[in-house]
Image (cartoon, rainbow, N blue to C red):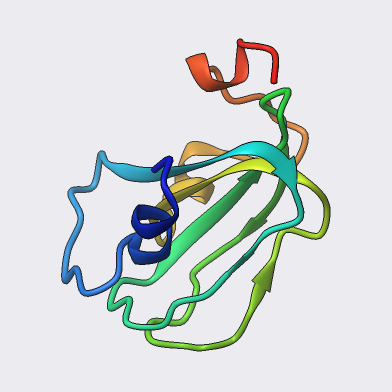
Length: 107
């Protein structure tokens, strides 16, 4: 998701997402970001990723429809939203590196 409208909409109003899918938000530059679950019916794992592709933090099993703000805690380039439990199932941990073209190009 590279434009503001798409990022704002994200996974809102969706009732399901295939188990092997996710949504990658590209903020185009590193900055502190906040997310929430307003109008999002799916519990999610939010993986906050630095510009070098390393995971800064993971917010697991977010509460559907919540307006609680979920902060990155530091500047990040992107957030990967996965179905709840997938980050743990994959063994993702802060400090792990994500291999994706987004993190291979200088910003």
